[in-house]
Length: 258
View 1 (spheres, helix red, strand yellow):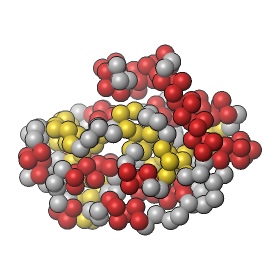
View 2: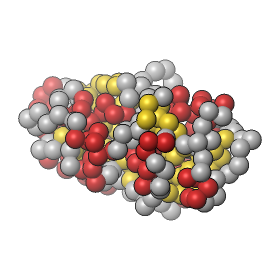
View 3: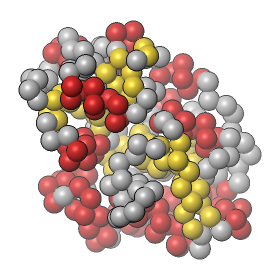
View 4: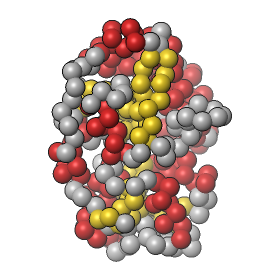
């Protein structure tokens, strides 16, 4: 396990963006390259058999409207997403939390889903009910994520935090007791409980945020088209249908903002 690096240091290592291609070039190519990390929950973006996933259904609807096909670009870790986008390896990042540091590097669409961060633990360990309790835990996070940033901002020392390359390794460590607490967004937690029913929600940390799609700076036509599509889609019955399909009826009050 590596020790966490400050989030801002990671951002500085991202290469400068390639020249923007924008929507006309994307249509001419016939495909939109969509970046997702390899351990993305299939309920969000599935690259295998079965249901497409919440965000994949959204982006495929957008692609049909533009007359192009979705081409998944699977990257090893969450930290690989922005560098892959900025060097031209993809056109859209799905499911990325909007942060001030990331806004310096990429452009974000309007909200896809809320992204409130919460502390999690695993039975038989206790529910972490306060930030003070959280700071006293053996904390582990996925490296170079908004989850890690939220933990650091809650007062967990970066050099005392275990880091993992992906959520699968982190959740396994939480289950077997190598760590006693972590941070996830509420949507990721909701999905993770299907595979790890012993997970427990604790105290919220950090301000409310959003998960959105991201494009290269300069791809203004693509950004505008995505924003228009998301704005219309969130007002349609299809939005609630997808929330219930992938997260359950109870999630409408949180993810559907009802």
